[in-house]
Image (cartoon, rainbow over all chains, first blue to last red; front, side, top):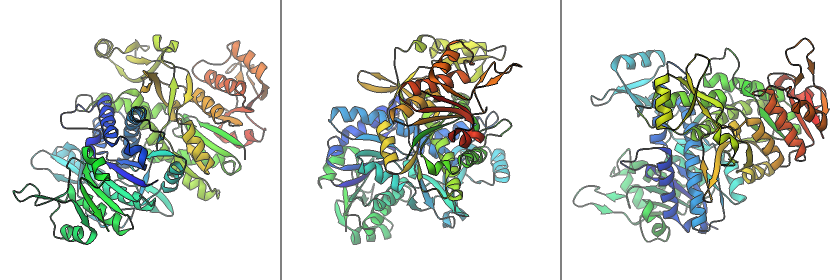
Length: 310
Length: 310
């Protein structure tokens, strides 16, 4: 059976206008599993997912309560979001399991991702995260907590954290074990909890790992044949948003690498997805797909989406 | 290799006077694993744990931020605490693994516990949880959220939630799979996320499951030979706190059942541990141990603690 990693985008749990309550997130997750439908039976699937809005809320809750209870470090908020989202995905999957007559049981695994403590992003944190602060609060956080902070277009100050490259999925063996026993693992949520190796031991580190780059490392390390990155557009585009915009369909590694190096993909959104796809193919992956939830099944059949092959 | 379930008490992560920051919790967890030491190599161990203070803080954070972000339901806060505590346990275990030359890798699994939606506790919620509210806030919560609430000895109003009996560990098969592949599973944190079956599907329910009772169900359902409940006292006692207090050592099922039925064990603390032990032995378990972390190894050798046998 073909092994594939499917990376759910943020819209698998939350869409514009959603209130963000737990039940709605779980209902969205059900829609996501439903659009995969029978594909969940045809492949040996591993699910990864983003956690942006959820970890943002947890950080907000930490900050608003900092006078009454100890805030938890960012990396541990990632672990919390894995539990929260994993639970919503479990309830949702079980409905899809019944509807599509699937046999596998879901299994949500706390997953950490190793990053290099010398990753250049640590000396140049650039990823804004969490609530907005006043200038005074920002000054205090920069002094007392050694946070990097930046004023954000008149809306207030935000914390900047590093976004280091993922190197290794620490729970790789556990994922393979669950897979080989017929479970559907949910792992590497939010890119995984970032850890560095320090004096021989793993330690959490306040950073954010791109979930598509982490999913790419995950897919390579478990020898998945395909990596499917689900997002809110059907394809990656050339000249995106311009009159001459052109959807990218089936494309080989050399061509997509050339596009990528010419800088046509937006840094914060399509860029990392393309990089994740390229890295996966370079590491021996047979196919990387970038498409929307609605087109996932057609894309797996080679009939939709951006499909990157060696 | 003998299979045992070890239920960590609250003091495995937090002690009186601890600030409760993540690093301290992780350091406490390291002490807990260290006191087990080589026992972690001699047995096929499954770890469960409490989550009282941690889920209390998460609830507090939810409440203090309810005007800026959607509070998550209690049951999903349990899932968050499993991720948080599982991460602290992972970092801690890896230090113990190195120190004691252990071979197993840890694996933190999101775990749900089935309860009966007709459990009598649902009509009589009695477990106080979360922050204190003013009378006015309490009235609002009772009306709008249908919460049960109670004034708590002049300190304010608190939410009361049901504490239903655990019936089944939903992720039992996943735990067995990880065990059979040589991992040390961490599961059923905080008694597991409470779910009921409704129209054929599992749904989260706002309740708190006693972690020792859940650990007892866990131990029985995976055919563990022994259940070890770790707490802050070396033994269960008769006439606890009185001059004639007497430590209970090795005791058989009939005798402990008689003690229990005579009401000598405190309802909120030792009572459920004794009940958990009795249920485990009645379901075929060979030995249930109640003791402190420091005495765990001696108790496993039959030389300390309260030891309940058929």
